[in-house]
Length: 110
Image (cartoon, rainbow, N blue to C red; front, side, top):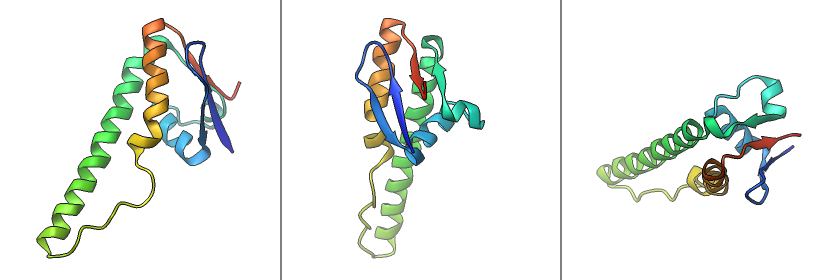
C-alpha cells in the first residue's frame, strides 16, 4: 500500500505504507479509519510538524549514542542501515510548512 499526501499548495508526497503509517502515528492518527484516509487541518500543523521534528531528533540522538558506545568499546561505528526519518519525512515536512503558511489542509486516502 502507498500513502499519497495531497495539498493545494505543494506537490503530492507518496510514501510506502510503513513510512506513511509512522508519520500518521506521530500525528496522532492511530485508528484504522484515520490511517486509511484523513485530513490534517492547517490549525493542527504546528503540533504535527513539532511531533515529526521531535521524532527526528530522537532518532538522530539514538544513532549518535550508538556510535559513541561503539567507539568506547573500541569498535568501528556501524553505518546506519536504511533511510533516516529525516530523509523520509523531509518532503512531507516541507508540504506541511507550506500548507501552514497558506492556511491549507493536507489530505490522504481521499
